[in-house]
Amino acid sequence: MDLYSVVIPLYNEEEVVLECIRRVSGVLEEIDGDYEVIFVNDGSRDRTMELVQKECEKNRKLKVLSFSRNFGHQIAITAGMDHAQGDAVIVMDADLQDPPEVIKDLIAKYKEGYDVVYAVRSKRKGETFFKKFTSKVFYRFLRYMCNIDIPVDTGDFRLISRKVCNVMKSLTERNRYVRGLVSWVGFKQAAVEYVREERFAGETKYPLRKMLKLSMDGITSFSTKPLTMSKNLGFLTAAAGFIYMIVVVLQKFVFGKTVQGWASLAVLILLLGGIQLIMLGFIGEYIARIFDESKNRPLYIIEEKINIEKE
Image: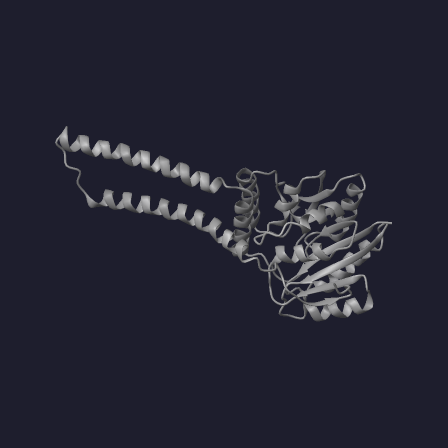
């Protein structure tokens, strides 16, 4: 009998966590196999930990890892994978936008022999046009920029087999983009479509600022194209500058015209300065990630474990 581990990060989810436990447990009780649910409390400041702790006392299949502070959503997923004991590991969010009922479809595909089953959003309910548009652009831009095939319109809602989970545990990079890492490790992968629901309660924990950070992590973790583009842009700008220099010299000494106006000069200086700063920014992002890796700090610190054997 297979054991299935469900990993659910939590950050200030007191309004939704009890309903999440009810629905997830209800689905898992119906599957052909045993289960465990690992909640990762990512430094919540509300009553999330208190509510989950009470539920864990009633059901030992519910487990908790509680961080010493907020380490971030991707790190929380990583911690859950590190402690999961299942033959297959399912990752989902607590807000119920990813319906727990889809877990059955993921497991059915897994039993067909796939090591990775990712959920593709065929429709997104309750989201603004701006959110839908930016997400669509982001996923396609990321796919273009990266050197690996990351499926579009997918989040972290997916199932991975034990052998994929073991490989993921060996990847220790700090600025993590989990869905990209799952694609990078390879193995046999398949998709399951589903309709993403409205958030059950509360507010999103991924505002635009965090989405931009996640996108930068994804691009810099799996592609060096920004550096190549910066180099090419530098050559193009230098060539344009050289051509313009020839034009100025010809106007001065051949046609006897003096180039006048500080406005054009100021525009050129600002344009070139802006391009240089953008290129330096790209380089800085990569250097910052090298700096993070060199410190070799642990990815996370666990303050408390519930229903999980002490190591």
